[in-house]
Amino acid sequence: MIAALDKAVCGERVRAPATYTMRALTLVADRKIELLDVAAPSAPAAGEVQIRIKAIGLNHIDVWGWRGMAFAKRKLPLIVGVEAAGEVAATGNGVTSLKPGDGVVAYGALTCATCKACREGRDNLCENVAGIMGFHLDGFARDLVNMPARLVVPIPAGVNFRDAACAPVAFATVQHMLFDNAKLEPGETILVQAGGSGIGTAAIKMAKAIGCTVITTVGDDAKAEKAKALGADHVINYRTDRFEGVVRKLTGKKGVDVAFEHVGPDTFNGSLLCLKRGGRLVTCGSTSGQSTTVNLFQLYLQQYRIFGSFGASMRNIRESLAKMASGLLPVIDTEVALADFERGLARLESRQVFGKIIVNF
Ligand SMILES: [Zn+2]
Image 1: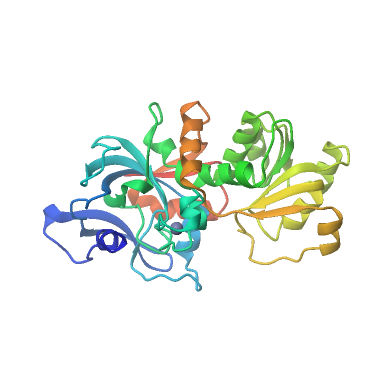
Image 2: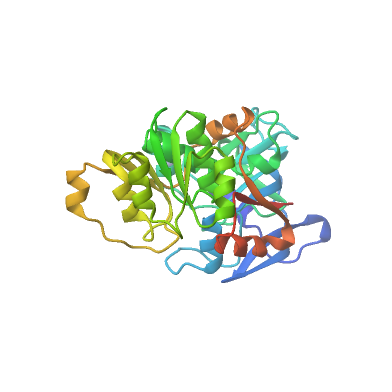
């Protein structure tokens, strides 16, 4: 199936007759994305679904891919777009769970379905994953894409494409971090770093929804107001205050139960210092750099638990969409047109955002 899929996913980048081409945002060199006409995929094979893409959610992984990453195994040109929502355009033989017109999102990595991790529903630990779409393999920023039906999740009634486009990566990543890894419980206190980011805003809302006390950091006063409006109990401007000291004061010197990290070296050790004894730190990113040093005395004496988290499971995507259907919606910073994809990435890179950037097809 993978071979058939690869053929459909990659297509041929030659100019084909007009009726058989589609638009695709294609990374042709570092920091250079072009809107190209490429061959449209053939009809979906058995077990596949053809999706007409409607909206793309931007994430930091798109910025990494756009800037270029020396160690990433991939070839250019590459169709970008790591998370998306769309509607079923056609179904292949044997697909009974979905029909044309259904709203759907897709899992963003081509997992094998057969290894132990896949069989146990730990999709993001697949031992034979073929790569992340939009990063290693051609992604979702195109009119049509064929996907294995097993990697496609229906959008519940009442959730629009714009919001659903935030489910496969942003929301599902946060769901996995908070509830599968950090095992956040109602009534606990959590520190959410960079509360204005796409995942930061989702983490604030998800933690508040189960009755946690949320302390968050932001980089300016305008974002502080917005974070408060989302329900954050305490907002710290990390440019004017040392967040470690403020968290200590706010928690009566006890510290927080959970720290939600994705900033990296700039905040990682500070986040550890904010934990109470036995506290949990979960991280899914490192936008401020790759490495840091950790005080090992502190690590074991304080009995910290540190979780690295990357991606999510299919179950996490379904859970995310269910949360959206019940009214827990993503915070949208801006919606941009297809031609402004790079402007969206630049905005994300500059960290001026509050919430998610969506690219509409
Ligand atoms: Zn697998």
